[in-house]
Image (cartoon, rainbow, N blue to C red):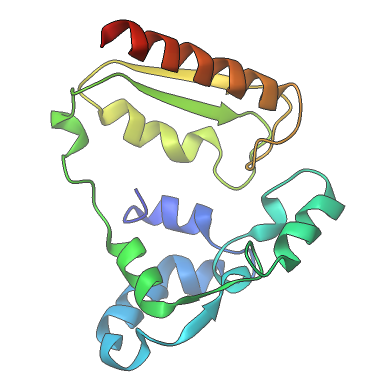
Length: 160
């Protein structure tokens, strides 16, 4: 949940940590009429260099105009930072929740996601994806994610 300061700081770019993690939401909220339509480079908002363990791949994603090289309206960033789940986790028990956690994810490590997961009322499970970074494109984590998705889809098909 990005509204939690630790989650916001974890999702913020390294150089902008203090600014994004602490000041961005209040500043964007107070200036929304002026700033909502302004474009902001995603590389200033998120630690795109942490999306993959391979520096060349991370650079490629960061430079991709449809990936990390894109710009987003400041209003989108503001509403993302202000977002809250439609159902509070303490009341969510509609279905099992699985956190597929890459074990080499320096962008969103388990300690950022775990407090929210622990608040979910229904059943939860953590599946560790070995050797994978945030984008989860490294093996064996990518293969483990594919197997997990196959399992979840198979279980869902068996319930319908």
